[in-house]
Image (cartoon, rainbow, N blue to C red; front, side, top):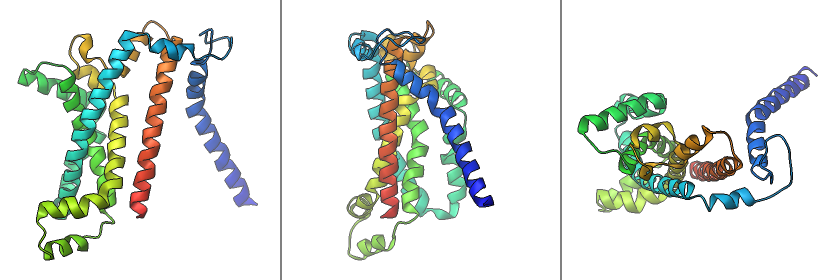
Length: 262
């Protein structure tokens, strides 16, 4: 009886926590379909605010910049993070120290990392733009990709690498013909996670974007719009960004789970 009461109490607490987290998001998504666009009165179901996004040049330009930044930073961080994970796993003797250095960007507050990157680019005299945002997002995403790939490497059978070497395969051949196929689920999962983080990231992009509309991303555009009040267009845009993020995270978790179980 006591165990049943404890279980019910835990379910109640869990329900309250989920309600606290997701009711505001549900309200935002619901209001994005409100024909009148008023947050206080429901006037009918409509997709017109989603259509209005396609007529807003500022939003389309920011979306294009976000896609460019996300794709470029995902490719670079996935490539570097995978090789970094393999290298760290091979050099297990210094693993703890290497992990501390590699995973520091995951622990350091975004505002601190953003200021550090801005200071670094200023010291180099680099002109701010999409390229500096891409580099900054690679620094930020690298640790996450490395963590995902390393989780797969924990159950990796290193004997197949030794067998490949015994059969005369070079290091490069072993890497691309033996290790990469086994690590593919984790690599794709890390790439999806990096893409999601890059699409959603605001603080680092805001500090390293520079002046002008040519380097404004979607989170920055939403911030610029929301300063004058929450409009139905913002609700629709936020709903789309949230949906893309949830899909990418769900695929990342599914692939990572499948890779680990395999």
